[in-house]
Each structure stands twice: as C-alpha cells, then as structure tokens.
Length: 569
Image 1 (cartoon, helix red, strand yellow):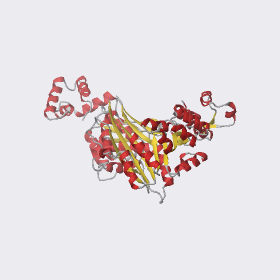
Image 2 (cartoon, one colour):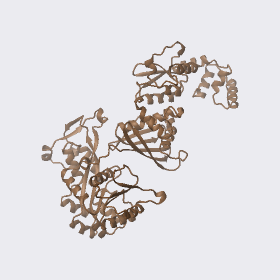
Image 3 (cartoon, helix red, strand yellow):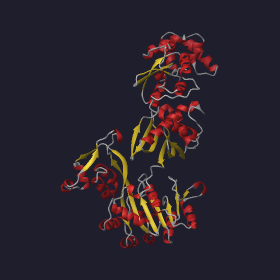
Image 4 (cartoon, one colour):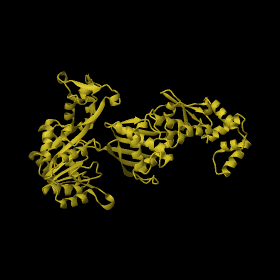
C-alpha cells in the first residue's frame, strides 16, 4: 500500500495517468470494499498501469527502478539485514558497502520506514524501487521462515539473548509469539541495553511536539541519544507499559511499575514512571543494577578520617544516624553499605523501604504498600514488635514516622534513615519543623551525614591543567596554595563519551552530635548556629571534602563548584 495516498493521487493527475472522475470512482469503490487504498483500486480496475506507476514514482523521487528477477543478491548482503525486519517492512537488501545499505522497496513516499531502518541498523540506508510482488518473492527465497536469522553486520544484532528475555518478560517472545511486535520489541530492547552498556542510571523517553526524545542520565548528567521516529511514540509507550505491568488504556494519570530482566549474566531492575504530558506520556526508567551496588564502605569514597568516624557511628548501640541529600545523591547506597558492614548473625536487622531497591542477604526487608495502609509509620510500629537490634527506615517523611523512629532510638535501637536537606546540620531543623521536640532530637540523634556525588576524571584522557581565574576566585584559592597543588581534567575521549568524566565518587559532610551541640539543639538554636559551631570544631563541609578529592586528581575544580555551589551559598 502506498503510504501518502493523496500526494500520489495528485501526481497521477499531473502525469495524466488518471483524471478526477476516475479517482473519485476508485475512492467510492475502496470505501464500499472497506479499504483506504485508492491507488490499489485504480491499479486493480486497470485505470493505472502498475509498472507505469512505479516508473512515475521513481522519476518523481529520483530513484532507480530495478527488477529483482534479474538480481542475484550475494549472501553477505542478505546477512546484513535480519529476516524478520525484511518481512515486517517488506524490503530486501540489494547492496551493502559497509557504510550504506541499499534496500528495494515499493513505496518511496514511506520515508518513516527508511528512518526506522536507519535507527535499527545504526547505518545509512538508501532505497531503490521494485514491484511488491518481486520483493515478497525475494523475501521467501532469501529468508525462509524455518531458517534462523544469523545476520551479524548490523549494530544491534548481538543482543539476542537479552532481547528474548525482555520480550518473554511480558509475553512477547521477539519474532515468535507476536511477529507484528518484534521490531518494536527490539527497538525498546536496544534502548535499554545501550543505556546499560553506557552505565546510565536513568532512561528518559520524552514526547516533544515533532520528535520523540531519548536521553540517558550518565554520571548524573543527561545525554541525548538517537531516538525512534515520532510516529512510533505510541507503540513505544504501550510496549514499555506492558513490560512494567501498567494499564495501557489509562493515559490520564501517572503510573508506576517495575521491570525485572537479565542482560547477559547480570540481573537488573527498572523502576518505571509514566506521567501524561501535552504531547503524550513521558516515561522514565531508573536502572538498578544489582551487581553494581557498592556494599563496601571504603569504596564509597571516604578518606581515612571520615571512614574512622563513620565506622564509630554505625557501631553505636542506639540512637539515630541520618543521611541527607537530594534525590540521586547516593543516600540509599550508603545506607546499604552501612547495614552490610554491621550485619552479623548476632544482630537482627529490619528495613522498611519504598521501594526495595536491592535485596540484601540476611536482612529482613519490608516493602511499603499504601494500598493496604502499610505506610512507613505502620511498618515501623510493627517492626518494633519483631525485637530488632537495628532498623533502617527508607525516609522520614512525616511527624508520625519521626516520633516512632525517635522512640525506637530512645529504647535501645540503632536507627538509620534519610532526609531531604541541603546540609547535615539542616537535619535538626527539618525534624523540628516536622513537630519533633528539640529535646528529643538532642537526646536521640547521634549524627547526620550530608552527601553528594562528584564525577571522576576519566583516567584514559586525564591531563594536567591550571585552574582558571574564576575557579580561583570562587573557591578562594591563593597563589601559594596553587603552587603546591596540581590538578587534572579529562580532555574527552571515546571511553568517557567525550565528557572528560567517567564514574562518580561520594563527598561527605559528617555532623557529629557532641555534648555541646546537643545543648545547642536543646536550646532550639538555628541551623546556621549549629553549622558555625560544628565548623569551628572541625566539621569538614561538602566543599572541603570535594576540594581534597580534586587535589588528589579524583575530580576537577569545575565539578567541585558545580556540585557544591548551592550548599556553600
């Protein structure tokens, strides 16, 4: 079927191959037959000669017209296109020079088909025109159904096992259970697997007015990658919602789901969030790689002095230890590492989380479920009857949860949790703002730790550099200081995606509740007063920790300023 019917009908009149009355008669006949293919009706009624139609299209689009009956296509060319792609898109490859693939197709107006093939193959695709009968005959000849496709020259062909796992997860085994969906399944699979290979933490699929944007969050920064054609947006959305067990008929409200799959020998989870926007449903998938979580505290980026302090805090017999920071700053990873370190057979550990991001062996983990009133507070209240030694609450969000956690800390339990505050002393003000009495905070809180993630300099392209005047001014670096310290930055290479950074490391601000600070909290002093007192008595700020990691060649001063500017302000 010719895709752009109205355009071709106008061409037929311009080339005097059919007049307006013949076209209207064909339109009526097609409607009566329940079809929208007016051009096929003109051909079938012998008004338009099919070969002349293709010749006219070839002339109009400047394409070569070929007869596949005269072609003996080399096997290496056939192997460059998967058989299921050829059958689905009704095209046949006729040449491939390693840069350009040329395919034979009937309809040169279907530019979206060529765009999709370019995306699927990761290479340039050109087209020639051939009769559809010859194309279908060539597909039967070169791609018999019973022979498994083993093409290896296209970019994404070597993801077979992962594609099959992803397909089977939702009942679609690619190319077997639902051939019509196989290309979409592979497109979605390609986006997920490419993101995983590039170490992305999130995949953002965002409908724009005239395109469908795909971005990966890598080392905390969003990076746009090639997206599928806009017309595939609804297919993509439906496919991902099916995989995440979401309601594909509901497009008016946000939905959350989860996908579990394997890529090679790695098990990964994807937390899926869908929200309606003006131009369609925006979907974000957070990639949780179970094998990548750091459960060894030293590998989180603590220097020896901070490591000694954290080790002392997490071995306290009771009290609350809070980890603060914005979403995506690594708070959960730190808590998991702390729990893993103190998890022994002599202690009982229970967590309540929303959601459970990683399953930790030997620890009782409880999932929040608001549909059955299993809130943080309800779960925490029940957990205390399980006689645990150590409790982890995913996040303290309200007064009820805070009060139960504090009561647990005051009755002999060690409690870990998170808060959303900019700095560590701000955790005190946040609890008081919730309604917790200052004297209870002063009595129960043992320490608060703020953290951020700093991008690491790529080791493959690192080179020395001299800090700019702006960096010197913002960070207050003296000439004497710079004379005694050397800095590096990455110039960008293929290993780091030409960003100069690869991987991230934590920076930390640890606010220890001493007797003096407890008295200030009891007196309901401001967060600024607490911070100033702690700084005078040796507390290292996030920026202090970041600068010493730049001094060590781990990161750059530019990254230090970017990550800590808001906190210092």
